[in-house]
Length: 283
Ligand SMILES: Nc1nc2c(ncn2[C@@H]2O[C@H](COP(=O)(O)OP(=O)(O)OP(=O)(O)O)[C@@H](O)[C@H]2O)c(=O)[nH]1
Ligand SMILES: [Mg+2]
Image (cartoon, rainbow, N blue to C red; front, top):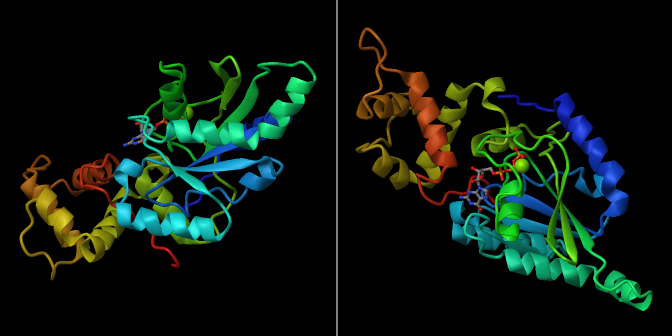
């Protein structure tokens, strides 16, 4: 399946980010802990003019903890230190803020010397669509300052939010990059819900997910959809079983396979199948 999604509003958002980068001291880039490589925008260093950057593994609550450890190690081997965060509960976010201050230490010192006490440092919160940027900001601020929603493209323009007297955050729309060199990247991003479903073949996507789960998290699928031994079944047969067990029928008593696809993807994305990572270090 070949997925590409780089609509005009992302080009516009990228331009806005580049225009505002002069005002920004540090970048907080959120990636999705379930796909820690595919969700890191290869354009980010370029867009942000190589400003100091903190990589945040967001949605750690939805990812497989053992695999997360491997990915953290992988990033650290590249010289990048990361912070693990659950933006819904707020776990890990203070660490991000401390790191932001740390990266701006010299600037804060310089400001102090010039008599600019409490001049805010500014952080840009960036990342792919639906990764949780606005949720992260709201949790930090302690109230719903930025609009959120479980679909890509919720944040449309830029929004500065005052966190404390000495820190301001810039919320940005989720952006991707013009071309996924590796088709698997597009698939991974579609699976976690960062590509709008309207341009996807959700049927085919759900079969890919079934194949992956069967191989890597066999029991999770069996438990969630009351499948008995499904080891010999083709993905499409598994999907039919899911439709049957969930009583998904269309008029004429025909199984509603399309609905089963949508439900499976939705339940995976919302963590109903448990903590599942869909990328592997080194592949
Ligand atoms: N389980 C879990 N869900 C999260 C976490 N962070 C965000 N979410 C959910 O992810 C969805 C997307 O969150 P948003 O904050 O709107 O994402 P965004 O990155 O601002 O999205 P765009 O503005 O569309 O680019 C929402 O349903 C959030 O509740 C997290 O750490 N864990
Ligand atoms: Mg947003």
